[in-house]
Image 1 (cartoon, rainbow, N blue to C red):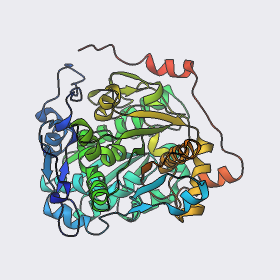
Image 2 (tube, rainbow, N blue to C red):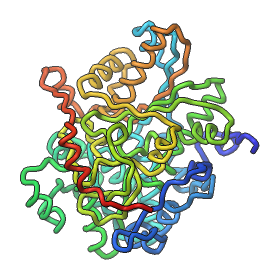
Image 3 (cartoon, rainbow, N blue to C red):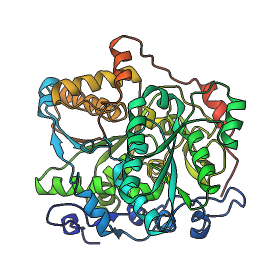
Image 4 (tube, rainbow, N blue to C red):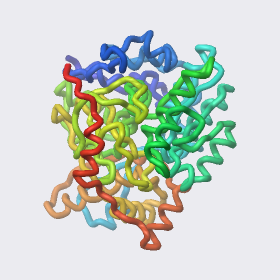
Length: 456
């Protein structure tokens, strides 16, 4: 198979014309989503009861390598894309490493993160379908912020269910959402049957993304003219986020940069999947080789300590089942500050790649993450989001390993967003009030016990 020249899929101003569907090049496709009632693979028609019809098609498409980005979405992208590929010269100097460190910076838009890449696409398809509005969940608030912006652009109603601990810790992100017209509710809430059930079983819980997803789906399916949209985990989201990787790959080719190691933080998997997509495609086609590292919080270790099994994507067990690395849909993570990484499972695409040995994963503790964040801020001048700082931590560790071994490797990591609304977390770190919670085997077993026994 001939090598794909990615630059032909960009316009003159280097904004991608096509999303790249990594699944088309995967020899082992992600396992299908299962209907929770019948345990049969979900169809487009069934998914369309929850998602926009076009997004349901994208979710199940394992064969179309390139999917054209609609002109209206590409025009929206011009407000903040292409995002910069930067070299961290000052960080390299501070570390004294022979390694070259590059990062793809996705925080140069009002939402402050990569989430806008998919939010605008999902809002576009909702508008095209003639819907009144959409519902969603959000963890730290980046996704909710991005979706509220996108819905404002298309004059759509936006209902955001925000994980309670983040709703309380990050009030300014909540207010940005409200500025763009979104209705924001802390989860779990008494507004839904599922929220009431979760609160009855876990009084005083700080919530989780799994809880918030259940509530958002219930609101969407019970409100005429609404559909549910999701900011990570789903195949359609990884597809939209491939603009990150296509731009990064094009820039690397243009400037003759060959990454040896590509690193990204991983909660549900959207930014990591988007960043590595074209590079992983080359690896799968035998055109090049790279080392890929997923970085997750030690408090929510889906890859490194989870099980590869069919599980519910939400705590309320109303969403389709996905085969993924999971801690169990009933697992409630600690109230750590990387709110966007507090999800019990990992996208099916990355889960399959990890299971096949095509990528690595590591878990890092919270205080070490903020040490890396502070060092990056002081050397590179950008205050990183806690989620992004997981990737920074491992990029620094790999650069120091290169220093020890005298290796001149090239490292690329995803800087997914800024941390200017995460100052409570930075305050706790500076005041020595930050803890490093790591779940025990007993803690994890409680979540594993709820994983359904499905063998296909």
